[in-house]
Length: 345
Ligand code: ADP
Figure 1: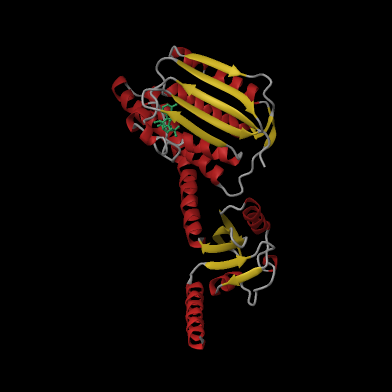
Figure 2: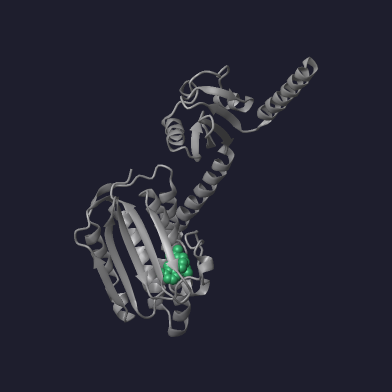
């Protein structure tokens, strides 16, 4: 029996040693806390990340200061769900994944350092913003002189001037959209929230398209519930969202109708823009919100598209804590649904 006990102890201590070695060799910072927030276990990487020693048995708040940690840990414990968040700690950015262990009601936190990635992302974004700014002035000059030239040249050369003008306009649109996108992507983009009457906004934006809709002999139907409550939103950005969605509906529809509807559903306003146009092939639906993604390059270009409109729309929706969905199929029209909280957090 003594021999057997000795064997079991040896096996157990070997297993513990193995586990300790694995935990301390993990590159990510690791932290195990109980449901009261007391630290039960940690590894070397976490001690380095948090710049603190001897932290076992302390409360996590003595080591991790910040409302984001409290929010993450509380959410995981109360909802008993796993969550992943980007969190700043000691001037570094971490992807922090929190896993709920149902058996002992404990939480495992893993800290993956993504500072380098974030820096590269920022350099890329800054580059796009700077290039767009730098291009704006020379483009305005080219556009101005092309317009002056138009009146001076003969019939044969006017054709070339027209091509310069069309392409300059396209470049101006791309630069404008890129600047809007980079502004929306700025970390501290703020919404100018006000009490917004979405019904009035839809009616006024729809008016801007009356001429284009008539020229294409399309039908515009507004299915608006006048009792839709006002919502806290940024009216300038929502106007931009509506313009982009309605403009697409008009651009990609040759016959039939465009239907805009708005209604309340619980704490949300549901906005729908539906058309009977060319639709979007199912295989592309997951990609249309990507920058510069267009289904048919030459078609989009001919219609003056930049491939940035829907990325802008998606950013605006996300800034308002809303969601956007699309239903469409090739040749079967498209339906864009935007859910906006009446009061964004
Ligand atoms: P674009 O400036 O080219 O219109 P968007 O970002 O607004 O760029 O849209 C991306 C692509 O999604 C478009 O090029 C088009 O292929 C497709 N798309 C967007 N809206 C519609 C629509 N209502 N009907 C059909 N296709 C659409």
